[in-house]
Length: 340
Image (cartoon, rainbow, N blue to C red; front, side):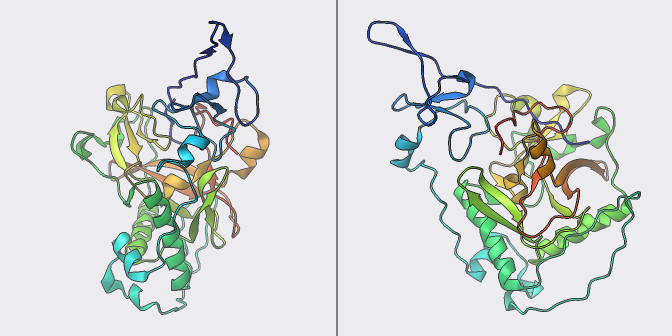
C-alpha cells in the first residue's frame, strides 16, 4: 500500500476592489481567465494574479506564506531561474556526499565488474539492488546533478532518516503502531537494501539524473535501463509528528507512520536534509495518461521494527524515461489534477 499523503491547507486570492468600491474579478496574468479562483495566487508585491497551474514551473498548491509573481521575483534573489550547476570537481562531489575516500572512488578507474545474474519470480516479489553506471565519470555527473538540485533548494544531502531535537525522537518510530499493520521486509530484501546503502557510501549510485524542467521544476530521469522491482532509493529526511505539520506548506512530505493513535503518526520532511527521492515527481492520477506514466511505487516497510519508505520500480524503465509515482496511493488526498 502506498503511503498516505497529507492534505494541504489551501488559501485563495481575495477579490480586489475598484476605486468606486465595486468588486473587480482577478484574472490570471498568463491565461487571462478569472476561473478556478481557489487556485489563483495574488502577488504580495504588485497584486497580479496567476493560477498555480499556469506558472512555470507549476505550483502543486497555493502557498500559505508570501508569494511573488514571475515579474517581481525575477528582480529579486528569490526568483526561480535555471539553477547554477554544481561544479564537476571530484573532490567537491566526494565531500558533498561524504563518500568514503578509502573506497578507491577517487581513482576514477573504469572497471566493469562481474555481477551475479539474478532470477526473479514475480510471485515472490524479491527486490533487486540498483545497477550503477560503470563509467565513474558519468557517476560524477549524476551526483553533480543531485548536488545542483539540493544546493538550489537550500538542502543538504542525507541518505538516512534524521531525528532532530524538537521533532519526533527515534524511539517513536515503531512499526507496531501502524493502523492495520505494516508489510514486514523479508530477510532477503533487507540484505538488498543494505547492499544499496553500502554501494552509495563508496560512490556507486543508482543510474539517475536530476534535471530542471521549466514546467515540472526539478525532476529525475533514468540514465540507463532499470529493471522492474529495483530499489530506486529510500525516502529520507527529518522525522516529525504529523500534528506538527498539518499546516506546513512543504510539498514533499511523506507519511512514515499512520498510527491507530493519530497523535503518534509520523511524516518525513525532506526540506532541509534529503536525497534524490525529494525530486522524483508525482503523476496526475486524475487522467489515464498520467497513470500510464507511473513507473515507481512508494512502499512502507517494517524493517526490524522501524518504519522505512522505499521507492521501487514497478516495471522496466528505459534510459531517458522520467520517474513518477502516485503521491496519493489509494487515498487521493493530495491535489494532483494539475500535475503534468
